[in-house]
Image (spheres, one colour):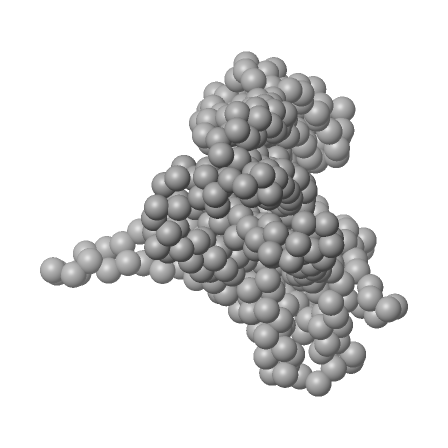
Length: 473
């Protein structure tokens, strides 16, 4: 290879130019994040059983579902929680389940649940399977509003959620701390007893009235006309005018025996404050394969635009902003790279001469840029694992470059001609460097090729070190 490089200098220069330009382009274009992406191999099975105690939920719902789920195989463990009215079952698969088989496993889980659904009590809902837990919410804001009610904040946060989720590269936007609207029907117990009507009758009438049903059609000549029976509640007045019938045959409206008002569920399950003020949280998750730095800039610009368009009193507050941490990590790596090159050049200038220091430092930069190209085309990302691998690899590259350059200088001092000294040093160090290369690859291969989450997390470590190990050889 050394002889070929000496005989084809123009081709080698073109290849170096490709590595430099391609490395800079790859560095700019590749996905950047704080940590490597991993697939969370767990799902949550949620079943609502209104009116049941925790003991009933455990015996009639959770136990039956657990027995069916255990038949699917490749399960690490199952953890269930039975509450009043609710069953929660966490299903965790073994970490060695390949990512390509994950969707099939969740399909099997749903099939097992469908099979056992007929054995559940009549009042239990269809079990819901939630299996998307891989989203990383890397940006978190709070929204405060002085002088505005919860209804105003809910309306504006829903608008903000729609605007943010339309940004390219945004996977999901979650709103936290929102109050759940409800309608309180405060029934006068004396009037209810006088008219001979029970609360369950009022509840059933409300549910039946507000239900959408198919009302049929009729044929009118050549035309077929749909029959519409409007029954949904549109406002509080519709609820007040709901007609009820007492046991003695008299009729009356719900407003005659109850006070009806709009309110929010109490106690509120999730509530948030920022600097002592009522606040709603806005969590933003990035789509896989995008650059968190570019997405963060776009989100920041969009939030500034939204804040300027909202009424006076609304304010966004940045709580957690992952792009800043990623940017700091990348900036630190760039500083380390520059410092490494400068230290190598300065020290080697004192010990091996200016030219040797420049050659080794330049080779170090070109190799790192070339590694960016390889990392990009293997769908790698820039995060703490790959950046750490670059820092480790730079130390290995400098060591071997010094060995080669020192050999060339020794041969030249002995009177060997320049082309021969370059080829001779490369030939006699080929096997030792190959051995060192294989040792480096073998040392990190078990971690990177592990079939569990550790291998998925450390995948980019192997790509970077393998690329730099080839450069050493």
